[in-house]
Length: 227
Ligand SMILES: C[S@@+](CC[C@H](N)C(=O)[O-])C[C@H]1O[C@@H](n2cnc3c(N)ncnc32)[C@H](O)[C@@H]1O
Image (cartoon, rainbow, N blue to C red; front, side, top):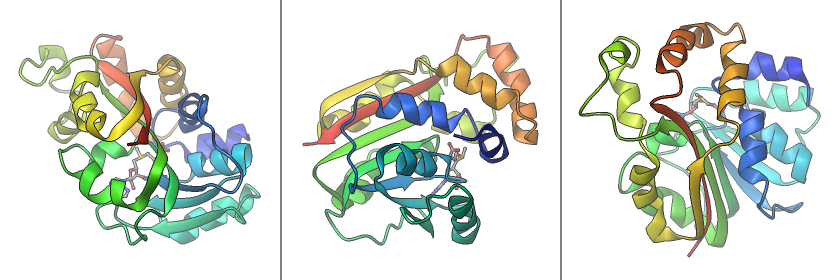
């Protein structure tokens, strides 16, 4: 993995570290069809293709397919990855198409409700498909009692998306076996890698993470298999 490629393409906490931890105990095998949902600039897609030799459908809303295709060529894995610019709310895939869905730092944008997983995502996954999702969240639900010092640093839109492990657990537990949800071990390293890069959004996030000082924000991973 090339550190320059990582620094140029990070859009949040280090997606390679997150993907590594998220997939550590999963049985991903060459040839599996993987949906990388909200892949951004494709860091996780490159990781999955390089490490496991899986076939990746790299879906993102903000990043064009051509930008990602060029990056996948640069990384030497374009033969394994199909770049697609799509809205996760309207996925045009066949029912039961994917063996695996991986989603890093994006699911909270579109899946933070009671229906997305059941109605939109689950139908395009195979029976027994592997689900592996990670996103920023909260240590507990702070929404009714926002600490004064965090008020200027958390915008309302973000707060609607950031929730606790207990909150997310209820969204997935009915649909997954072997279900696990926990704070990520790479929390500090993944955030520090992001905060120390020169992306202007990372520079903005520095004060938020410093002020939080490990009290409220979280980085959550969940894995399981479709029931
Ligand atoms: C913070 S970035 C993270 C990108 C990448 N997964 C990573 O970790 O580097 C959030 C990503 O979520 C994607 N996203 C947000 N809403 C989406 C939607 N409705 N459909 C598809 N992707 C979406 C954005 O396009 C953006 O690339």
